[in-house]
Amino acid sequence: MNATGVDEYAAFRDLMRLVVQRIAIPIVMTVGVVGNSLSFVVLTQKRMRSSTNCYLAALACFDTLYLIFNFSMSLVHAPGVAERKSYVNYMPWGFPLADLCSNTSVWLVVTFTVERYVAVCHPLRGRPFCTVQRAKVAIACVFTLAFLAVFPTFLEWKSGWLKDGNETIYWIYENELVNSERYRSVYYWFTAFMFSFIPIVSLIIFNGFLIQSVHRSRHQRCVMTQQKRGGDASLQETKITIMLIIVVVVFLICQLPSAVLLIVSKEIPERSPKENLVIGFNNISNLLMAINATCNFFLYCFLSDRFRRTFVKIFCPWCSRAASPSQSSLATSQCVTYATSVGHNEKTALAVSCNNKVMYVNKHNSPNKNANSSESSPKKDPTKPYYNRSNYYTLQMDATNSSSIEGECV
Image (tube, rainbow, N blue to C red; front, top):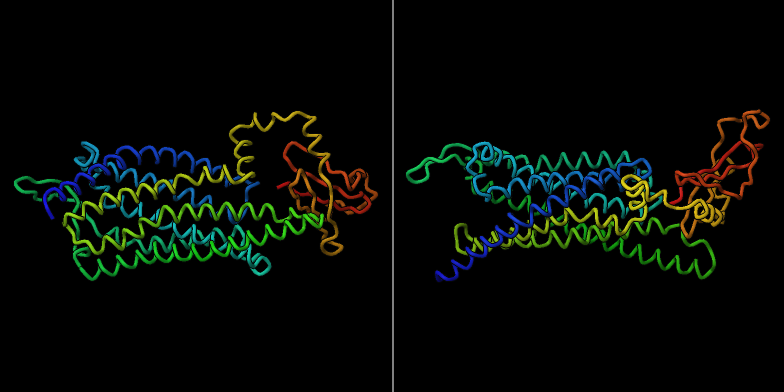
């Protein structure tokens, strides 16, 4: 290798450090922290409560932490920062914390993809498992396993005074654990398979099943529409599935370069001229991972009607009140009951079509069992829904039946 090649590799490394760590990462981090914080607020609202949104809220949380820790470690090349003793003491903790958040996010994506596969492809058998409570347990398990896998890296580095030629500097150094060639090799391939190769292969497989399911669902809806039957019953589920498929595809695009570098970098000797080339590309792959941790908020806004409505209701309430009373009345008048009597006498399900969307409503007994009581609800037309400002449509049966039916328009 001639001197020109060495200089070119070093120049490429320095350029990537400047562009990525000094310019791009601060911008991406700022946008990502704001976007993920907004996503977390929206996804944790009561009307957004679901197992899928529970995973997405946890993903927003860990993505935010990853962006913060990743940005903090990029400051090592900023002028004057690495000379501070407090920052040097933080470095042995910053790297593992960033890896912990990144690895947790990776397996959260895998977990909600598998959960979506079960919910879509095996709805009857999988319904008991796709609950908010089980989602919280799964999130806790993913974090615990990720922490156990990353724990050895907290012991790899220490900070202290070191001899650097004729001067003494305060910097980080490897402990005895890292000097073991067996440990370095085993742990390297363990993390590569656990947090890169296995998740990527799993996501490709399950995403393929979900894409097939969406294709089947669209075909069935076309057939039902041609037969003039209610074909919108699964539209919301299909939209959610499509959104998660796109989230996973973006994740794969941003994670694949890192997986390739894991293989390539193992074949390049340390302190060789080509190591600078790997460092430069590693900066690019880290930027892609940061972009992936940032872009989910924009995907939710673009792909999810309910996310947009909830976001507007929370942060732009004046926009949600902009509709005139006549428009609200028109929207209410377009709600038509088209399916009844799904179930038994004591539990009846209805489906209401509201502006080409579907509302599922469940029949339940009223608290007042006495039809002749003066406190019983007045009689109302069972086929005429009424509108209130919280976007809930309620159908109330005849008072003598002492039961009511209510639900939310999706």
